[in-house]
Image (cartoon, rainbow, N blue to C red; front, side, top):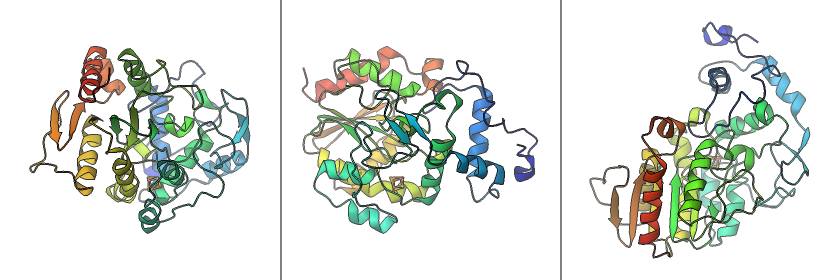
Length: 342
Ligand code: SF4
């Protein structure tokens, strides 16, 4: 399938079904390791789904249509699921049921975020359909998949916050990854960034196991919760300002429910840091003006909270040594100390 007609660019879209052999492709997260061919494929897919840039491609639409309704076994349980996964169909850790109310607009996100129950909030987040571009992207990625995950069902829904219901530490990021959280249904799970993060959480005693590969694997965090400012995987890891604002009520409400017990918030990367300060200000926290600057291991006191900056564990940062395991461990250990955790 050639893409040059649609985009005026001279390159070949890798044929579906004939992409990199299994084993040469690696897992992707925020900055995950991909072959250049995989990266190009995902860029082209993002362009195909960008209505401001091009017409939809009929061949790709036909391919996706042929995949709709196909059931594949969950890697842990072996149970069969469609991609995206219907709510309440038995996926491990699915917070929703079939009758969970669905937000279909920004106004409905505001309305449905007004619940006082964290479990109900998680359920409502996980079925949200308010951002048409992100819904289309996450579901088409779930259908099209990566070759290396072609035998798995993809979650293909928003990613709720995950971890302790009454945390003392929050870990805040920007958005889930297309083939990480969007595949496994758990934030930071199934991608290289998550591999780094969960290994570090285990080293410092905040997780009961060093890996997080699939929902339902028994992983538990100690007094720690992970949240993202935007709950759907965005094309090129970049949500628009409108999408970020539409998703903000979910983020705000989860913060409001978690803040009474939270003492330290670790922000992964500057985007997550900026989104967190906006959300804290919107729920009445005394965020200083001008805003304190992001920096690795730099901490700022905001009321009873301490906000810690941490370089994002993307492969761009970990491969170049900008973020090392001892650096990540030190930030998490400091968060533990601030949270009075043994
Ligand atoms: S990004 Fe947030 S508001 Fe938009 S569809 Fe996903 S969960 Fe809903």
